[in-house]
Length: 411
Ligand code: MLT
Image (tube, rainbow, N blue to C red; front, side, top):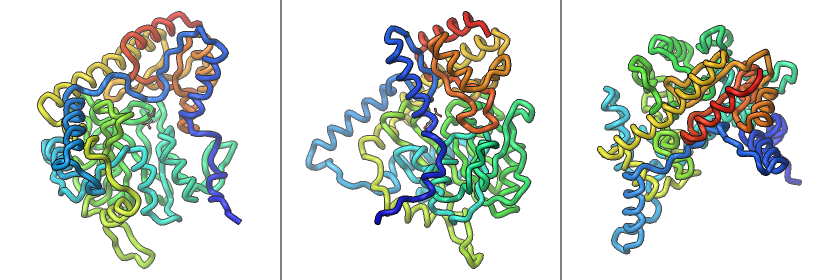
């Protein structure tokens, strides 16, 4: 008899963005004439930068010729891309990395979901609340969550680090022992950031407590302010305790093209049952070489083009486009007397729902009365109740239209 992985039965409802899409599609099928504007899932809408497109075309041509055709590539990624990443994303900021410390992949969602496999099944996991649901759900699937407490809307074995307007969206250090800490900055969903001093507290904590920080930095390209850390490795000692995840999805419009990378420093250690240290780089390398055959040559060539002079300029203008949308949403929402957070160093705007409306109530109101889809804050965790997320990834026209529609709503 084939038995299921029982842990899957602990998962709550459906995946957040699938539920948002289900409700949107139901509304559209019942109201076929409604002009629905989607500012829900953070999916980009601008086309790929020209430099990327040219590089993709050129590499397709290479694959069409017998003397330049390629089969399997290195599971860790081609050196031309890894070296470009190291030179531009790290060395330019004073961070030294070795080629063997960077692993190219087909997306940060997969990497942040898969990374937990290399840790013990009894690890205690800490997440920010609200949180990108993949961190929680993949640990539930692996049996680390404990039972779901319906009243608290939380899993009993996961440590939740509350981020709300009362604490300025800066989580406190855990009060109980934890082994693995997920941090996401610029934050999804709140759009908020940590200062260097705040981030240093986490690195110091992880060093003193032999924890590992899983640092999701998928929105790094959106940082506008100089004093916001772009990489956790800007903090002294972070290479001993942190894995960093970066993505081309939001940086270069790769949500449909798929390319990302993960940095696992050689210094980073965790421990076996007898307390002996083991380099996590070796384990991740073993995992990837066994379960992953690398990102296509064509895609990696496309990604590498963002580091050319034209590529850099085109990406800067892409980021600028979305951050102008963020400003339009931020200012538009604030002008309605609604409290608004984020959207300054991130493409997400996190707002406090007016008149104490619950997150899903606000979702329904926006969908039915203004035909706007956003993401309910409570879908990211209990601390997100009474908050709502809008993305800046829509077209300019839709962003402006959405703000205008919002201004006509009665709250
Ligand atoms: C989001 O909307 O939070 C993101 O698009 C999710 C993702 O990147 O997987």
